[in-house]
Structures are given as structure tokens and as C-alpha cells.
Image (tube, rainbow, N blue to C red; front, side, top):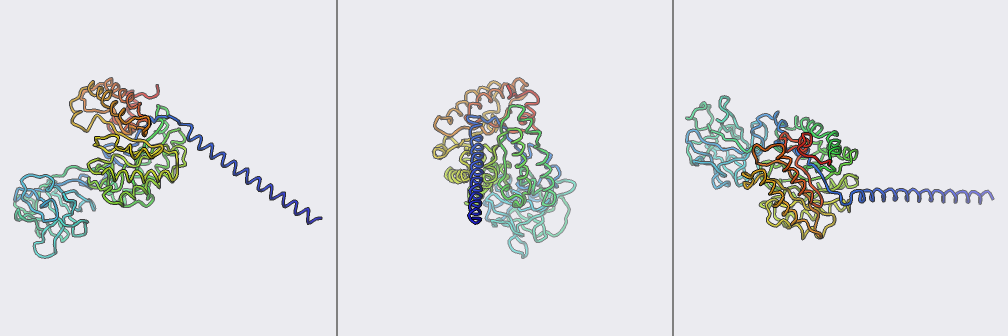
Length: 524
């Protein structure tokens, strides 16, 4: 009898335990369902009134110039272009045929073949990249070694030191890897065999007049410029102070409901990103999500800088202005891996609203087939982790057909097409009056946006715009009218808009300054 009683007790215990497990499972499922429902139903039809956090996790020196002040020899960072003119011959050094041959000193004027892009090793030592993307270097170690441009990748023989004249920094001498200086004894060949000093006069064939221009101020330049010892300190200080929690509070109090956060592809490797990038941007992005949760701000993550650069601009973290994204499958796979990483990390966060797969690919460097291939892979990566996070496809810059992504987008769910509208960067805006600029917004931009806004197509997003123009002497009222015209027109975008950018030393580019000073009001 005692045995039977024990069996009954055990049976009751097991049943009670199973019931408890079932109740817990039901509770978990119910909570998850409510979370998903809340994520889906709390924002139906909500349009983004967003601001870009430009210059934060992807450096743009024009937004925050002082970030570059401490770099030694900071006018010769990666990508700076130099031209060299022999003082004895009076002509420019040239990579014959643009590369793949020798260096000569026989050009009376300087253009592409006479221009060298710097890859910085340290503050005085560089590789010289020529027009064909090959590198200048020594040919052999014998007497009178010529300088040739045949290397596809720089080695020790493609390393040069730029020695400046203390009294006149435009006068330089170039020391090659053999310890000797380049010289132009004749205009037909530049050799690396000058051992003496000889002074800095016009009779010294190793002296050149250097014209340096086109200095880039992006993530690659700032991190490689400071070097591996100092860059982590500088960048983490920047990330922790440039955008802070109070900024999100300010946004929430002034009519903004979202941020578009540009990130670089190296964030997926944090805390061990590839050199010269440094760790810490992922922690900053985590902070942004925490602040977004606290102040009810949605987050759009934007892959602003793709491996190899998708546009050759400093804001894509290019090293030297080259566009190499999409030229190899490796750059596409690295980009997909970045999207996969971001989606896996944040897809379940209630404030992730969208992921933009790439920013501003250009039509003159990125083929549509390549971009479509990547967009499909990136879309699939996001959908592995979420069925409702929006996926944003950026239109290529310079295209004639603004609906070229529609065939691809038609097979996708919760997809958005991003366009950027500036009354800048084109000569047609140079001489427009205040009213002509406003008319352009009301007529041309309105028409452009209407073209891509269709009932059965993807949502539309004006992902970048600004209340800045080429007009001189504009009044505050002029700026207010210009900004209001854009708010009215871009407010018709079915996904919304995002101002470029939140903070900037250039006042009209800073939405924070524009709101604080009454140029833009979003709370009415």
C-alpha cells in the first residue's frame, strides 16, 4: 500500500512539473508574441523624421576637423596627392604610360600621370601609387638603379622617405629603400643613386618642388595617421564625447523619432578590426541603442564605408581615393558578413528599425549587376534574423533611371529605396537665387520623388538632405523658407527623411544648431 501511495505521489509531482513547464512555455510565447506585436503595431505607417549621426563612427574630417590636429605631418596622410618638379630640369616627374614602366622628368605640366597618391607608412615614409594603381619602386640594386612603376603591391623596395627642407617645405628630397636619393640627372630617367647632400639649391638634381593637394580626412587617414599606439586613445575619446546620451534626449524633445547611424565594415571585427582601424566603435553603437531605447528613438544602421570603398570618397574610408568595392567577390562577401553581423546582433532589439545595405555606390564605378547581387545577399542576411526590419537599398549616384532597383525590390518584403537630395555639388546650383532654389525643391525634387513613389513599389526614403546651398548673403528667413520647402516635399517620402547631419562645425549642416537657433522647427 505504501508503494502504491509513493507511485501516486510521484505521478502527481511529475504532472504538476509538466503543467508548470507548459505554463512557462505559454508565458514565454505570449511575451514574445506581444513583443513582436508591439514591434510591428507600434509604428504602422510611421514616417522617419531622422537625423544622420555623420562624423561619429565613420570619420569625416570636414565635420570635426580638430580630430586631425594632432597627427604628425598631417598634410601628408594616406591618399594625399603629390606632384614633383625637378629644380634642375624644370619639369615634372612622370610615371611613363601612367604605370608599368619607368619614371621620367620631362613633362612641362602636371596631370594624372604626373600625380602620385601616398600610402603612409609613418609620418615621413610612404609608398607612391601611380595612375594605373601600381607602385613606384627600385629596379635592382646595381649602379644607377632606375625607379619603375611595375609593382601591384608595395614591398620594401617600394618605400620612400620624403625629406623636407626646414626653411621651405615645398622643397623635398626623396630617399629610396637603398638609402640613396632620387635624382633627375636627365629628363629621360629618374634614378635612386644620389648619395651627397649638395644643399637645397636649384643646381642639386635630387631636389624637387613638391605640390601636395587633395588631402583626405576619413577613417583610414585618422587612424593610420595617429598610428597604432595613439589612435585607439584618440578615437575612443571621440566616440565617447561627440555623440552622447543627452543628444538622444534632445532629439526626442525636438520632434525627431529616428537616427541613421553610419558605420564602417570593420565594426564586425571589433574588438580586433583590421589595421589601421581600432576597436571601440561597436561599444559606441551599443550605447546608441541603449539611448534609443530610453528616449524612444528608432535606429537605422547604415553601412556607410564598405571594404575597398564604393565611391572613392573619404566618407567611405577609402585609403587613397580608389574605388575597389565590387571589383572582387571578397569585398562583396566582407560586406555581406558585416550585414549578417549587425543583423544577428541587433535584429531583436526593439529600436532597430532598418538596415541600409550600403551608402552611395556610384554609377561610374559600381555595375548594377554587381550591386543587385550584393543587395540580394544582404537582404537574405537580414531576413535570416528578422522578417520585419526594413532593408534599405541606396540608389546609385549619377544614374538616369531612378527606378533601376525596382525589379529587384519587387521580390522583397519591407524594402526601401534611399535617395539623397542636395542643392549642392553640381554647377547648376552655383548661381541660383533663394527663390530659384526653393522652386527647384517644389518642382524638380517633388517630381523626382513622385517618380519613385508608387503604390506597388518599395517605400521611399530621402536619406540625406540639408538646408545649405550656394546662395551668398541669405537671411535667416531665407534659410527657414528653404528648410521648410524641403520638409514639406521630403515629408511625402513614404518611409521618411534624414537630415545630414546632427553635429557639424559648419552651422547649417548641424541640425542641432539649426533647431537651437530657430532655423528649423519639427515639434509643431
